[in-house]
Amino acid sequence: MELGFLTPLFSRPGPWASVYVEGTRATEDARRIRALRERAVAALLIDAGADAYTVRAVVDRLLGEQVGGAPPGRALFASGAEVLLDVPLARAPAAPEVTWSVLPHIAPLAGLRGEGPACLVAHLDGAGAELELRDGPRRRALGRAAGGRERDHGHRGVPADRQEWHYRHRVENAWNGTAGAIAAELSRQWPGSGAGLLVLAGDARERRAVHARLPERLRAVAVDADGGGRSPGASPDALDREIARAREGFARERLEAALERFRAGRGRPGEHRESTVDTGPGQAAEGMPAVVDAVRSHQVATLLLGPEGSDAGREVWIGPGVDEVAVQRGQAQAMGVGKPVRARADDALLRSAAAAGCEVLAVPAGVPGPAGGLGAVLRWTV
Image 1 (cartoon, rainbow, N blue to C red):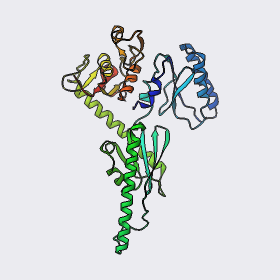
Image 2 (cartoon, rainbow, N blue to C red):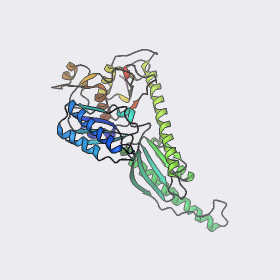
Image 3 (cartoon, one colour):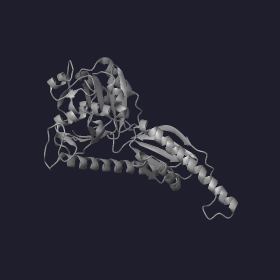
Image 4 (cartoon, helix red, strand yellow):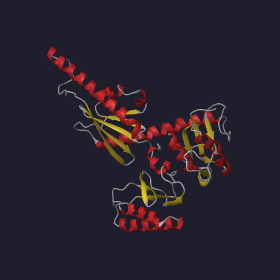
């Protein structure tokens, strides 16, 4: 999970209302079920200590949900009588989860937002490309990358005369320029998109031309999709299926690679390290004390969260700064935090990870992961 979209949550002090609910289904009694859901959420927030203004902001946002076409679930984060973030979920929570806490309770997002990263999709059409961002069920148009290609309406056989050869050559040159313009626009938009996967959709020849002009960092995360261009006969449904498969495969391979690096860096099978930095066989941290220290010092490349562990729900001490997190109150005071407060370890670590640009991967139940449910692959060791 990329964390850039969570940045607005860390620029405002809490407390925070965090609400995870199932989406409204298009059934005959949908309105009645939604009313019951909203009353239950309001009651849970009030019981947790939320102020009336923030409760009203959350309920009003839920009231605006359409009956039908809603995502399977939603996560809302509100503070100061305002909903700051409303995130569609690919999977509904097993039951409504409502908290009122000093930090937004963002940890469940890792397992509920869905498999795979956000995708930057380029729909190639022969004269340019329409760009869009797909993040779970959400889609956002990002504009058009255009070129000056002359369309080739002829066949691809051997040219019959010199004039046709020159025409074909001019067409190829024009498309090469267009492919370069598309690659340049993708490179420009990629850093701010939050995407982890680039999809080139359209004609195979056009895909190859764009792919060849991408910088190395984008070629490494680019995949092809046979359908989905803007040419006649393109199938949106086929593209959706291809993108879903690409996202799932990308997420699976990324998790497997991260776990392999983590296990190699951790050391011998079954060895549990509580120290800050491993100077042994590789670069990994395991257990809450080690991971807290590594996150605070910006060593973490990938943060691993596993549901089958007790560390994630333990409390740590934090200050207002994103890197002010410690296992013990005295440690936080030694860092210069005047009045440390308690917060869940997973939420505090995710706040720090978001500020440092780390990626976060959820380890599914049943998959061997870090002891205690917290681990990290490190960028560097001391």
